[in-house]
Length: 123
Image 1: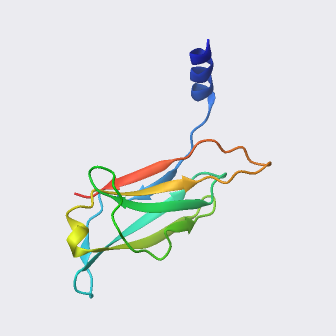
Image 2: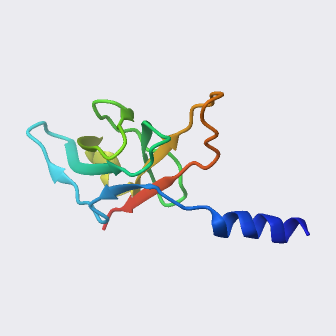
């Protein structure tokens, strides 16, 4: 009984997430020796979420150190943002994924329950 109720709720709920492009980013060299960068673009299709956390991970999903203007981006509903991600040359070959995770805020007005995580994979 419980499984059928959960299945019904999942099937009847509309799903809206965010988008992150490119799907297969590439690292490029910068003017600073030993530093690489990639430029990502994100679009928010979720009216209930305004903040997204950026992360870079290896093949085992362990975090890799990186630098960007903000690790948590504010992105209003139906807005776009471009951001650069910088990484040291010693971690370029280890980096497998760059991900954005919706940050949920609890309040009495909104009942957001589902976080969305979008990942792009380095070639």
